[in-house]
Each structure stands twice: as C-alpha cells, then as structure tokens.
Image 1 (cartoon, rainbow, N blue to C red):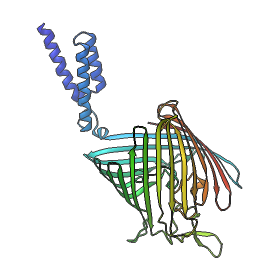
Image 2 (cartoon, one colour; image 1 turned 180 degrees about the vertical axis):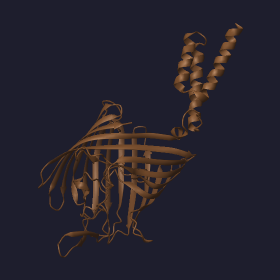
Image 3 (tube, helix red, strand yellow; image 1 turned 30 degrees about the vertical axis):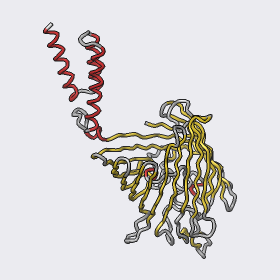
Length: 407
C-alpha cells in the first residue's frame, strides 16, 4: 500500500513538472493511461486535465511556456485564399474571361497590456484597390506586398489609438463599399472613442508626400450610435464628414479620370488635375433583425453630398440582406442586393470599389451577391454587377465566381 501511495505522489509531481515541459496533448495521454491502469479514477483525471488546461492558458497569455517559442505565444495568425473566375462585358468591347487568385496572411501580436501590433501580407501590386493576381504570362511568379502594419493601444471600453497603415474598417464604419474599396488600407492615425452605445471615430490620413510641409491629407470625423434594441434587433448609424485637404489642383495617383478636371486644350482630353475640393457630408444606417422569417434580415442605406460643385455631387446606396448574418458553416447562405448611385464629383475617383465599373465615379446600377457555405470556413460566392455610366448610358456586366477558404 505504501508503494502505491508513493507511486501516486510521484505521478502527481511528474504531472506538475509537465506543465513546464510538455504539451497539453502529452499530459492528456498520460492521465488517460493512468485511468486505464486504475491508478487514478476518472473524476480525479478530469480535475487534473481541467486544472492543467487553465494553467497552460494562463502561461500562454503571459508568454511563459518554456517549451513553446515566445513569438508563437504572443502572435496570432489567420488568413484566407480566394480562387476567382471573372467574366465581364463592357459596352463597345469584347467580353473578357480571366482567372484570378488572392492570398492574405494576417497577424497580431500583444506587445504589452493594451498594446498591439498588427500586420498583413497580400498578393497584388501597387494598386491600392486590388489584391488580386491574374493567372497569366506563362506561369510567371506572383508578387506579395506588405498590405498593412500598425500599432494600436486600447483602453477597455472607451479608447483606441491606431497609427501606421491599416484596414479602413478599423477606423471608419460603413455598411457598403459605395465610397471605399474594401482592399484599401489607410495610412496615418486614428482616435476611436466609445461610451456605451455612442462612438466617435476621428482620423488624419496621409494621401501623398510632396516634399513640402503641406502634403495632401484626409480628415475624417464620424460620430455614431450602435445598439441592440433588444435580443433580436440591432441598429447602427453614423454621420460622416470627410475633408480632403490639398487635392484641388492635383492629379491624384490611380485616378480613373472621371472627376471634373482641367481639359488639355490641345487634345481636348481630361488631364486629371482636379478643379473641385472634396468635403462630402453624409450618413449611414444599418438595421438588422434576427429570426424574422429568415435567420437574419437587414436593410441599409448611405447618402453623401459634396458641397463644392453645384451639381453631379450626390452619392447614395440602399439594399437588403437575407439569410445568415455571416456565412461560417456548411449550408449557411446569404443573399445581398444593393443599388448604388455615385455622381462624378461626389467623391474622389481613386477610392471607390474597383469592381464597380472599374472604380469610376459617374455611375449607377445594381449588384446581387450570393454566399453559400460548403464546409466550415469554406464558402462559395456568386457576385453579379449591372452598372451603367450615368452620362453615356454605356453598361458593364460583370460576374464573379469565388471559392473562399479561411484559416
């Protein structure tokens, strides 16, 4: 009997030591083997495993597990891969079919309490509105770029500070891509304030560097309100003021030449040199209801006006979402429809969604999206655009079939 007790004591000491030297899986296998041999009962085994799991989680949070590299204890990684088939037809041009890929790797590291660093790598080139790579050029290798890198400080419940290059969804709320292509990552700094259901997003973003002390910038001021009216209804709304400082008279990089600009008298063509300021003011609303015939139903709208030009200065969109709030699992589905109207001088033309008439302004039309879950973290997207140029009435039809993988 004394030998058995000594053995049990030795086992518990060994298990305690394994907290510093072994993985949770190894401890789990050891404890289950002891249960099989009748050394400990199942109840005590479960108690040991529970305490072990809690201790390992605490040590991982503090980056104190000696057998695991410290960088892997403070960095979380995730990402996605998309395989796309895209067909498009622009009026007056031949139809085009191409296959494209996108790969993104995202990471976040906790540096100290409240301090984080985020970073991301993505396929693509210099175009800020696309991380796609077309399959072409006799198996040519594809480029990977720094998509974003930023530092963040968060004080619980009320304050977040961000600086660097980061996804615009971190600092600007918007229910659609009427104004912003989802691939754009902002450069500059933001202060985000929150108190219960109220929030205020403020940011100063660098547009370009002109070797002067008066470089063009974007200032954003966005007060908003977000709440769950009850367990089934959620509402978010915001007023947004954008001030583009120093754009007038410039030719912006990546312009589509659809804003009003100076005309070259020799050629009669637009030079891209902007003749207006851009200071649009508007609002956004998203209202969602759970379990109303469908798992989730949402209606949304946005409206903006740029006051500098006297006409062609309005932008708006409205739409409807049915199905799952977000497709994550097998057989979940979501259907989304939206109509957009973006006049030529409502917004700078180097920022809108690049799939919508190439990212131009002066357009209007429809978009219909279907997302369907094939498995956990794998889903199919069918996306159809029917967009026309407001002035010429020339139309674009674009259909994308995407197979999406998340990890």
